[in-house]
Amino acid sequence: MAARPLLALALAVSALALPGRGAAQSVVVDEGTFAVSLRGAPAGTEQFAIRRAGVGDDAIVIANAVILLDRGAGAMELRPLLEVTPLDDASVNYQLKVSGSEASELSVRVAGRRYVARIRTDAGEEEREFLARPGTRIVEEGVAHQYYFLRGVREGATTPVIEPRTRRQVQLTASTAADVELALGATTVRARKLTLTAGDDVRHIWFDAQGRVLRVEIPAQGYVAERQDLVR
Image (cartoon, rainbow, N blue to C red):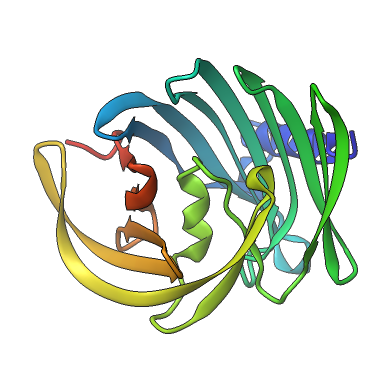
């Protein structure tokens, strides 16, 4: 698929992060683990890493993860890989491989004023196009760490968001933002809670002072992802 160059780029970034291989060129922005629950029941985990490579105009940020989920219809594994420009957090390239109960592969790339998505499933291959509005983010359904790229959204601002796997493009508006106390396990931490809405689509995200995603909650789906590695 067209996504192979992006995969090769991610592997290259990982190599740069190895000791003695120019580690200063690759910086870990965040990495960790989320515990995922659906309708109040444990449903899986998400292990992720976000890295910045390069400097100046050549800098990129790459976010990837291994997500294990069971929505009740069988276990599935998601492996998303996202490339983002660090200047404005806009998404540039994306790929996703899903195995298990819902096997599929997809890639998304910018082509002028469009994002072109190629999606391959057991039923065949299809192509979808999404409008490339300025500042567009890709935030896949069931992927918590990608909300990191919405950490700088201000209250009242609207951000175009693409969910390639569900074939959706929505305009998420930051309706409220507040400093709160968040319980992570037995630990309570200070956090900024951001609420994003698009009609009946409501999403709550908690960030720490460094912009790291602590918790994601989507009430309509009964979806909750909560950081485990930051619990002390």
